[in-house]
Length: 191
Image (cartoon, rainbow, N blue to C red; front, side, top):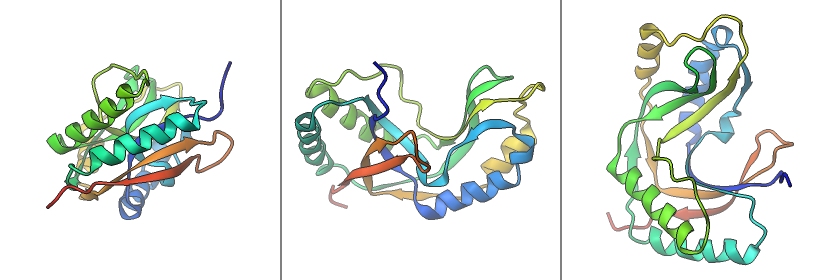
């Protein structure tokens, strides 16, 4: 049975960085014929995809577990790094922005992953590849090309942002923006 509502935990991207990314994309979209573009308010870095959840009790347990883990995690800074794709390099499935390597982000993801699995969620075991999805499904006869000039243009974006909270999101596939933050978990570790 297919469910239209899914849940995931993610780092939200702040309004200023959403706008910076959106402004950069506006100058490139005519050269990037993707089928669908992610609404800028939906930009995020997924830490754990939960899928469909039948139980409010399970979500409540998860909230308590994550709040406890966030008490020991300090806010930190992330910077955009590059753009890349998932899927075939000439006809990608996903076009995304990456962030600089971050021990703090890796630790945060590990703690969230652990909290989810401790209460029974089965999560994807692929290695964590932090990214912000920008567009989906290449729809051109000509192949996608990630030129050095294009890559350089993106890497020149200076948009560091502070990660001081994570969200539990609910997906609404029939809306845009389609992700609703239903709970906020502040990072509360002492500075």
